[in-house]
Image (cartoon, rainbow, N blue to C red; front, side, top):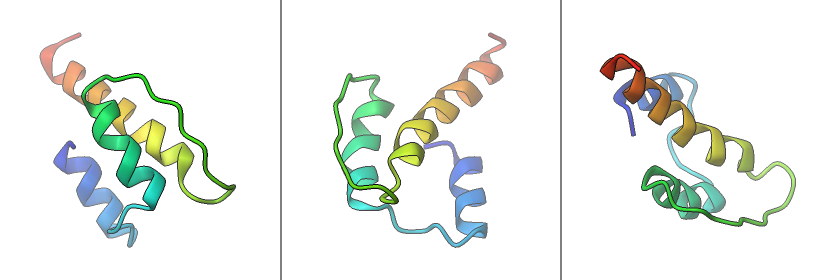
Length: 64
């Protein structure tokens, strides 16, 4: 994942992914489709948005 995202998460004390994040993020970084089910408050939103932000930053650097 983009180091800027990791650094900013660490600054806010988000250093260890939740189980859903640990399971989902690697697949989404490879642009795989997934279906995830987890309880409220387990980090699903971050699990889906962090790979999206990673790809956006990557594309921005390429000039897209």
